[in-house]
Image 1 (cartoon, rainbow, N blue to C red):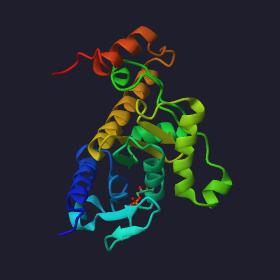
Image 2: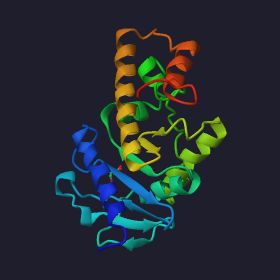
Image 3: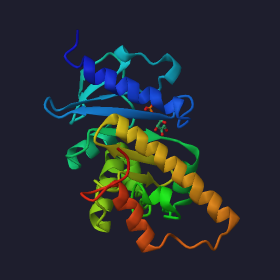
Image 4: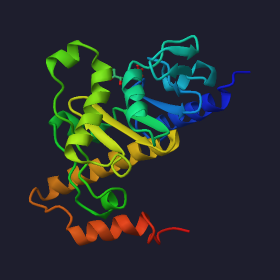
Length: 232
Ligand SMILES: O=C(CO)[C@@H](O)[C@H](O)COP(=O)(O)O
């Protein structure tokens, strides 16, 4: 039995949530789960359809992208996951999908504006769409540069990756993260729902204003921080 069996199981279960939640079709995504003590993460193998995925297919990779355990090639997005694990030391999982509304905003190159309290329950910022990758980055170490762009954009924009656990990679799609792989998947589902709602709102009334500050803060702090009172 592998010493990483529990990590593989966590990664497998998080990946299998993606088709259940309607966030992926075919092979359009990947989830990873980290084991910081051993300096490795578990990730979906590249190009394997979800209906064929098995726990034993999950690949164990170190932060320098070397395969530590597994017979399959890891996700083509592995270097982006590794970059996020290295630079966001608080996170335990990363998720990438090609869910429809998130990708539509990413392709349009637009931040998802905060239109209502569903969004504010999770974060008070717009969901950022990153600037375009340079041709050199695309032709170079593309997936590593994608991770670097996420981290650099958060630094330059003063975004806190512990509050804003998601970003849209322009022309590509969403990456989300969280304290666990399960939370990263949850954040991908939230992103997709909020992106869908914002798009429908703007279709109904293109002039709809974004949410006012008091309501943003009321909803966010009902669920987060020392004065939270949402839930049990
Ligand atoms: O954008 C792409 C492929 O162009 C990827 O994000 C795939 O959607 C998932 O890749 P694998 O994890 O299967 O390598």
